[in-house]
Length: 290
Image: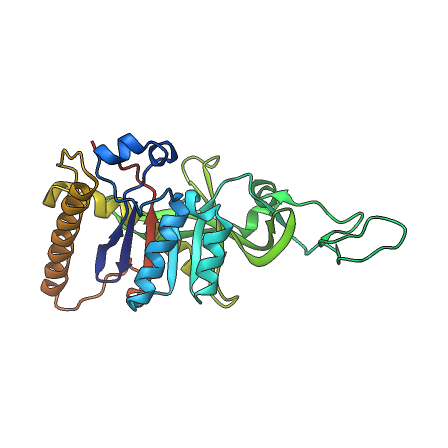
């Protein structure tokens, strides 16, 4: 599990967590052999991601945006955590996530005489049902799609078609907050569509949301650079603390190299980065001690 930081000056690692599968955390013998501290308990990837973000905020890392793949975007708890911290996000979600295009009518709790009391809010009779995000996007007019660049790659501008629409999230079959429903479509393979939830002010343009979504891939760039330059993946460890020692040293070395490279540019800005060094990205890498 990795948290990276993306800015106009480059991208670096911020934090790391070793993800232990749930079956590991109930196997006392295995935990003992790997010297996993007793305080370490099972955490889902969104829980670990939230913990890393909270630590970065406590350390006053200047960021406004958070982006990540669908492992994180499909977690209501993580989305609420980011919203509650006053940050904005563009998080990928699966195509089957359900939303409303208009807020449905609700029935409030009510004590009813002569029958069973209604103790929880529920949808009103006849209220519209939520749709999948794929259904919502498929219903939009073709003219609403816009071709935008999310930066420059080895073969030139990275172009995709983008569209967004305001929707109401579904939390446990009830309406939640209003967010942007953002989608990215491949130009060469139009059937390849990626879906996102984007929490940001209404004034934020589509081009900015697309650019933030594109910074998600700086995670892969960081990993590839660290593999090639600082031995990120060149380890054979059997103990929990050994993994942390190796990864911490590799990530620090990568950060130093990136910092030196930025200094050599004499403060020149890159056209493809998120402005003002304010983006963080989450990666759901599968990591375990060997």
